[in-house]
Image 1: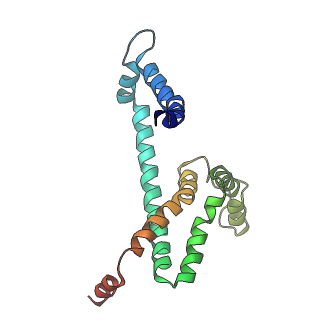
Image 2: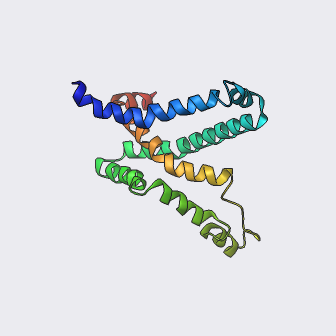
Image 3: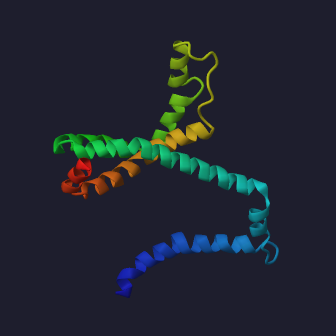
Length: 173
């Protein structure tokens, strides 16, 4: 059994354990043992602002994905089976495209000379192009697009497990 497992263990050792161990060693050793790197994380404002911005963006993405994904999952659960398959196929369709390609597509759409800004200027809604990329807005839009199927599919799977009797009982109350 050890001979069968050893190639997988070697891969895990080479690709996970060694790099993480090397990174941990570098974090505590710099011209001698020191905890300076950890002190900086807890004392410098830059790190706290980065953590706060990360959590703000992740919270915004979660709320937006829930607001967009819940109606789609509910609709897919409540329509006949054929329509449900079509809706779920459209939800899964972005998985056929690489995340990198989708991110570049959003860059092309949202940049200053992109389709969105050109359309808004054509409608005379704006005079100057809006900065829609390389900021929080662009990050949230692209991340929601990438993570939306990961919100819809678990919601749909959970809704499928709810018995129809409970739904009818809830509706009558």
